[in-house]
Length: 237
Image 1 (tube, rainbow, N blue to C red):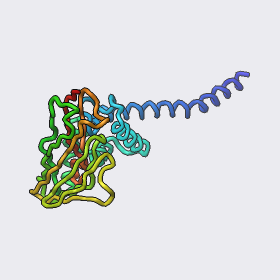
Image 2 (cartoon, rainbow, N blue to C red; image 1 turned 45 degrees about the vertical axis):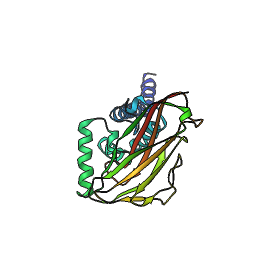
Image 3 (cartoon, rainbow, N blue to C red; image 1 turned 180 degrees about the vertical axis):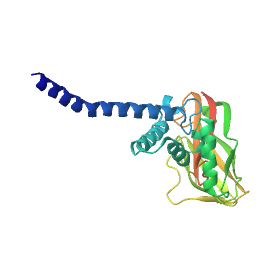
Image 4 (cartoon, rainbow, N blue to C red; image 1 turned 30 degrees about the vertical axis):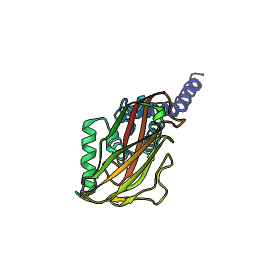
C-alpha cells in the first residue's frame, strides 16, 4: 500500500506541476505589464500613468503592449516600439526616454523632420454657447533637416473642424474621421504651416462646464509620430 501511495503522490505532483508553472508565468506576466504601464502614459493624458488610466487611447496602448509581451518581446524593446508607434512623449521614465530617444535619432541617421506646434494649447477662458463658432490658429513648424509629411489630422469631437495651410495650399476641413486615405501635406525644413481650428460652441456636443478638445496630427517625425494641440475653456450659457 505504501508503494501505491508513493506512486500516487508522484503522479499527483507531476500533474500539478504544469498548473503551478502556468500560475507563476501568469503572475510574472501581470507584474511585467504593471511595471511597463507605470512608466508610460496615454498620448493625450498628462495627469496619470497608463496603469491608472482606462480611456480608449490607454486601452489601445495596453492592448499593443500585451500583444508584444505575449510574443516574447523584451522590456527594453517594448518601450522602443511604443515610442515609435505612439510618441516618445508617452514614456514617463526619464532614463528610459533618453535611451529610446538616442536610439531613434541614431536610426534616423541625423537627418529627420522635427514637428513643433506653437502654442501647444489655447485656453479660451469663459465662453458662451451663444458665441457660436470661434476660430484659433496654431503655427506648425518643421525645425528638422528633412521633409515633414503630415498624413492625417483628426479632431476629438464633431463640434471641431480643422484645416492646414502650407504656402498657398489649404486642405479641406477635417473632423472626427480625419483626412481621407492618401491625403498628405509636406512642409520643407525651416518652413511652417498654419493649423486653423474652429470650435462651434453652439454644437449639441458642447456641454456647460469644462471644455477640452484635442486635434491630433500624424506625421513622419520619428520622435513624435503623433502630436496633439488642445483647446480648453469654461462654457457658460
